[in-house]
Length: 609
Image 1: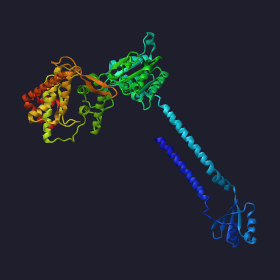
Image 2: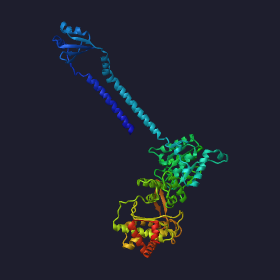
Image 3: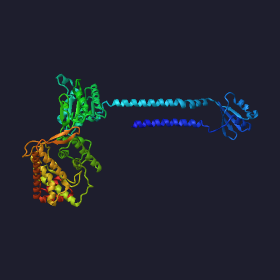
Image 4: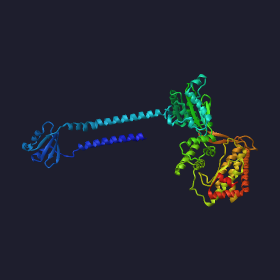
């Protein structure tokens, strides 16, 4: 668009210049000065009105004694003096007139310019220039059209931007993952020792893990460690509007990579083009499927593909086509899990390198308070703490900023402008006090870290429970107690105010979902036994779960609903019983919340001691 506007502007300027040129010469050639005949000129000479006559070829420029200007044209066959005498001019009167003959060269080029060049030659030049311009534009457009088939992969050559390169030292945790990738790097560096023993280089390595766990960061580290050309591209960059572009770009990418082998190709978000074939709209003619077909052929087709390792990342391995995952294509699948407490501490230390931390900052405590955080979450946490420190004009990051950033990442920013009325503040205080008291009373619940009735994100208040250690398995008792804690807020409202509000709507959604999963997914129902109910169908071209197929009878559906109701009612009864027995403690916690709005772990433990 910018190029079109620029060319249009140039054309307009050219036409304006030509128009100005025409205007100049037309104005200069206009008969603005009075033109007279030779008879009139002869009369004026006899009347002694003429002072000077300048001869320019056939043109006469006449200057009268009153300084007026006139023009005339003499006869071509004879001289001016002879012509004037023929018209009866007195010889003595003619001698009084100053005659001057000017160089006629200017009139010659002027004649050619006005009569030949401007009307004939210049239009031909303009038409020829316009045709050349149109042909060059068409050629450029054709070049752009053919350029669609060129790969958009960016190349990182070994040794480039060493200061900006990432290595495995910059990636905390993921020990086993780095070992797997280090084998690939070593194979590319020194392939001879592997080839001598009969080992073949893996053709593809698939990085699988939840968002933010470090898949792309590891790919950058492989680029820095390998010392070979590294091509990186996103899966979405293969598919364009035009049919066949995706597969053509795949061919161009692998052809370019083979010329630079040994090398690594990294495709981020592989699921954009690697989804299961035959599940989308368009069948085998779908453009995305043709792109996938070309990748399959390039990875393990008739032609050998030696020295090119394909590295890819996805967080949706369940929707990838089985042909991608077979041996000979993606030989290795490397699983990246969320970091444990030790890895979280290491990640925090990496992101704290360029930040001035106060002496009392304990990153181990921050790691303990952030179970379930990914590497991206921890990086965001440290960044938010630095931003908060700068906003408050401090020179060091303290524990206060770090703990506040944990809550901001988990729940959202504080909404101090969201002021509750006294009645709503009291309801919120008893609601959160109910959650906290029931959680502290049940043996398998995580300890309460903080209670607040200051709005954060969508929540009017919150009770923050964090585990003391990482958990990978959960039992039925923990789930039942979690249901009781979730329902404790509404139970406290009913107990104190004999009324319930909409403040528990989010809790009820979580309760319903958890109870349903206990029965239908985890097989923890005593009545229905250890089995799952319902098969989830993926509509792959929409990229999300859209429906669940019932693989059970209507009677079983009734039993599922009954079991869910039993779990929810039992958890509500547990919460009500605890709150009734410990009503004074509930009042005590709620009063302190109304007074201070926030209760930390130490103060809460002191209250319930």
